[in-house]
Length: 61
Image 1: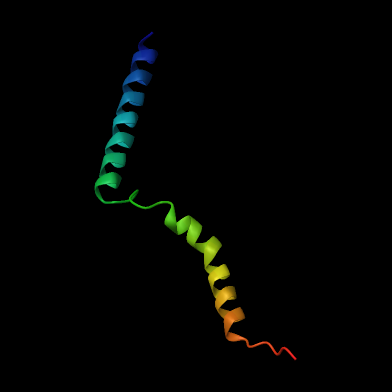
Image 2 (image 1 turned 180 degrees about the vertical axis):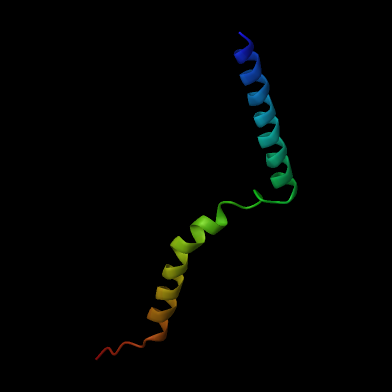
């Protein structure tokens, strides 16, 4: 029975440590903009392709 108490105390200490790490990360701005960076790599190539299509003149006879 005493093992359960020890494990409970250890798990509470670990949970508090993760909660404190989460609060510190939020205060430092870790989670401010998590969407733009993941989507930027998907759309950046399309912008470059559109610019290159506009810069190449096509001949229409």
